[in-house]
Length: 342
Image (tube, rainbow, N blue to C red; front, side):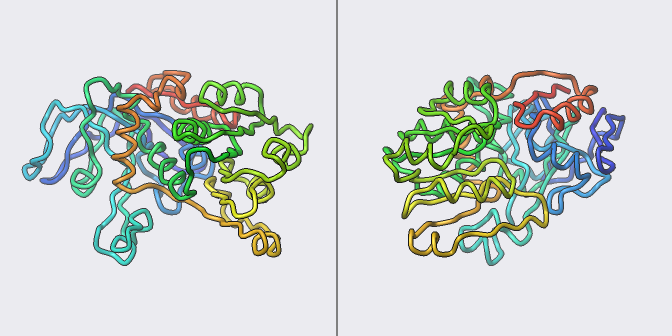
C-alpha cells in the first residue's frame, strides 16, 4: 500500500509499505478520508512528537473508513462497517484513569498512520475508542471526531453556561470549533483573529462580535468595551503562543476562567500577575487531548449536525500530494483543513 512515513524534520515520504498485519484483537481499516491537523503540521515541522510519534513512523491521526479485516477475537465489529477510530485509548487501570482523567493515562496508547490506504487499529482502541458511523454522516464528518472531542473537553473544563460571554482568541479550525460549540450552547461569542477571512468564518459559525488582532486595536480595551467593562466570562486561548497566553488573562472578567488550550513550543515560559489572579479570583486551566466519553459526545454532535466538515475542510487532495499540502499548511498559519483521500 501507499503510506506517508515521517523520517524527521520536514522529511516526509509517501512510499510503498506492507499492508499492516493484524492480531486477534485488531481491525484493519481502509481509509476513506484523513484530515490534516495543526498538530500534524507541528510534528512535520519539528520532526517528532514527544508523546505521539517517534520517527521513522507512519503519519496522521484523523480518519474514517471501512473495516476490511477483523481479528479472531473481535466481536463488536464486522467487515464492511463504516467506522471512525480515535488516535488513542487509555489503560483504564492507572492512577489517573481511576480518577476520571483518562486523557492523562500513564499508559495512553497512541496510534498513527491515517495518511495511508490502510491502517491497523490496535485491540485496545478497537475495544475502547472505535465507533460505527451513522449512515447520514460522511467520512469527512466522521474524521472530525478527534479534534472535536478535544474541543468538547476544553469547553466543559471552562464551565460555560448559556448566556455567558465567551472570548475565543485564535480562529484556526480549533478556534472555530470553539466558536461554533459555544454558540450552540447559548453563549455570546467574541471572536479574535489575525485576518478578516478568519473573522468571516467565525461569523458563519455564530460569533456575535469580532476583533482583528493586527495591532491596530487594544484588544483588552475593546473586549471590556463590549462587555460593560468586565471582560469575558470565559476566554479560550487557541493560538499556542506565549504572547497569546499572556493576552488571554487580560481579557477575562473577575471570577472568570481562562483555558490555555493551544500548546506552546517546548520550553516556553510566561509570567502572570499574581495580584490579578488572586484578587480577581481568575481560574486558569489547560486542556490536553480527549477521553473516550468525549469521542462519543463528538459523534453525537456530528450526528446532530452541530458540526460539519463543510465548515472546516476547504480542499481535497490525493495521498501522493501530502508533502506539498504539509508545506503549504506550514507557510499558511491558521489555514483550514485538507481532506486526504488515499
